[in-house]
Image 1 (cartoon, rainbow, N blue to C red):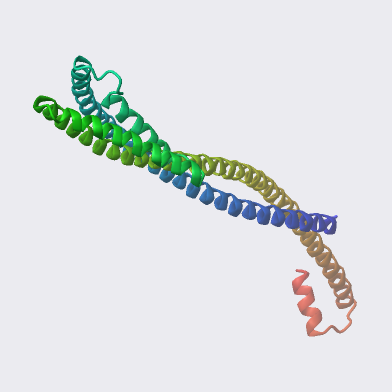
Image 2: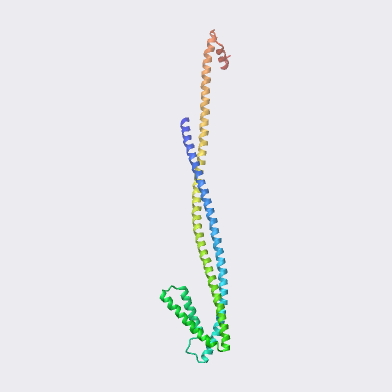
Length: 286
């Protein structure tokens, strides 16, 4: 029975070591997943902060763009008002057959914008450039005619200056609008990266939870094995004490029996040795 218990204890001990090793492996894996999760969460925060910075810059530039647009529109309105006065003067003086300077300027700006933003064949672009030259020449002719009138010349000069200022501001508007768009694109990209790293962090966290729960289960199994080992130790220890006690009792009985035999020899007058005397003393017969 004792040997059977010892063998069972060995199996439980081996199982306990397996649970302990597996628990330690899972705890190490959980720690690794936790570190990855924390790194990804920190990365997510950095991406979000970067996106916020780009958003703030974009919004700030857009405010500047709107302010510039207001100034540009103000200059254009002033120029348009002057050109309206000039057109009224022309109509009053019988130049109805000619297109107005305001209309010519609009056509020129429209065609120049198309030339800058659209792709043409060499032949079509040549025709477009020629058309712009013709319109500019027509506008120049009308302006030359108007400049003969002192008052109209002053209005025309002022209108041109307003147009120039509006054109310069429009260039700045375009540059800033492009910068705002760049910050917007960078903001969108940063948010995309944040979403991706957040998703990876959530995955790492789930793996951490699973590993931690598995480690906890292995630890419970390890504790259960340890308790079972203690129970085996108690039983085995008790059996060993009982076996030892039984062995001592048997030895004592054997000594007593031998001593009684020697004592009977002594009583019969037979010669006994020193060892026999010691045996009689040990058995408390003398």
